[in-house]
Image 1 (cartoon, helix red, strand yellow):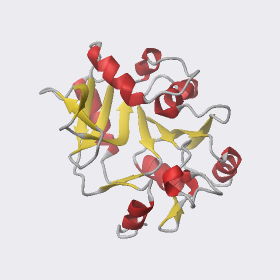
Image 2 (image 1 turned 90 degrees about the horizontal axis):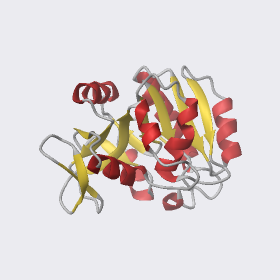
Image 3 (image 1 turned 90 degrees about the vertical axis):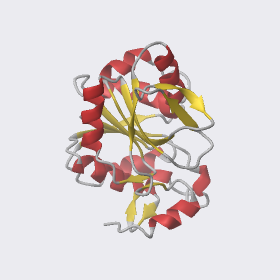
Image 4 (image 1 turned 120 degrees about the vertical axis):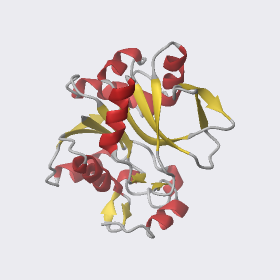
Length: 225
């Protein structure tokens, strides 16, 4: 399995912390979010990781280049245009081997989810994409059918956790990366077109989106190392 870290966002919810740095280089527990996410993927045995960059791109390049990583790190540069999650994934496609599943992980997510188990379920279910989800309060919920297939958005359902496993065949099904677009909308479209977009439900209590000040504070209560 290869890895893709979505780290190009503007981090507007974390201002003023992101006035002079990208969200990915905000620290929690004495370590940047990017470093934590890379270590999480490395701990899952991932040896090749692509990181997309846009906001303070030069600082991101410098940070990545100044560290010794166990995994090989490639950069997908979106300096010219921020492409959102779907466009960013499509633009990064040539940097992957095309032979392995890709673990897609938002840089502002802390989680104890077993990433290899997500891939095992992805393979066992024969999914094109497998979305990590949990039961929690949010305005954006997804509906899955009795077989765990994504069918659309809903007022009652499961919340996407910013972590997924996708098959390399997905790239050919995404629009070109010449404009920004969210990947969730594409998953919904593909599900309606007959592709199997599945789910992996995990407990919500050991998962945290630290992309906003109040949850960044909550992260300090975690036993981070």
